[in-house]
Amino acid sequence: MNVIEASQLSKRYRHTWALRDCDLEVPAGHVVALIGPNGAGKTTLLRLLAGLTTPTGGDLTVLGGHRPGSGAVRDDVSYLDQQLPLYRDLRVQDMLRVAADMNRRWDHCLAKDRLAAWDIPPRRRVGKLSGGQQARLALTLAIARRPRLLLLDEPLANVDPLGRVDVMATLMTSVAEDGLSVVLSSHVLAELERVANYLIVVSRGHVQVAATVDSLLDSHRALVGPAEEAGRLAEHVPVITLSRTGRQAQALARTTAAPSGWAGRPVTMEELALGYLREVAS
Image (tube, rainbow, N blue to C red; front, side):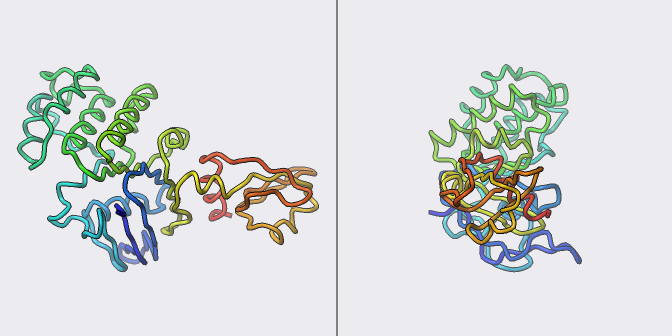
């Protein structure tokens, strides 16, 4: 089953296209890294998937062919961004009760256990929690709904590095135990590299690449060769990015083997993502 299917998906705000002619097919059970510069269309894509806005054109379905936001999948999708949906004047334990009343599916034991593991006092007011604790609380509320698809738009911006590792571990546990699918947007590429097994790169409203991380890493190489041969490299392999430094040229190419005269090595997910973003910017 595909948790996301999009065909020619487009979204326009007045005279500006946030997304245009995007095609996607994401199978269930993946942790998807959604990468792109500010204004690339990442938040628009996540809001479309959550059913918080509607496409201008094209088709979009989630969780096996359902329209985002429809009654069939409303309880199965959780969306969380930097504007954490919390009532600051409530105590943490009251916030849990409100969430339980607002959701038809709710795992109170999971929520209590998760907050206890993070040492978040149940009687403390939400507004008195640190930014990191508030982010953990919001994520707990999202996961306790027992969704099948979790959409995260930079919700960990106020969490310290050790806390981010802890939160990521919680996400991976949910993926492994519950078959949860996650789409995570973040500017911390090294963090995404540790947890993601599917990569979507968005820039200027277009999907530049969308595939499993393993397949992308297997089909790309970092190449080093003589600068005088750089102009002819594209005759042998599809070149994503190319730069020259003195007598040496460096390239990211879609190939499994280095051409004659060039040395090749495997690439990291971060190098791959940055390469496609530089391709668009150049």
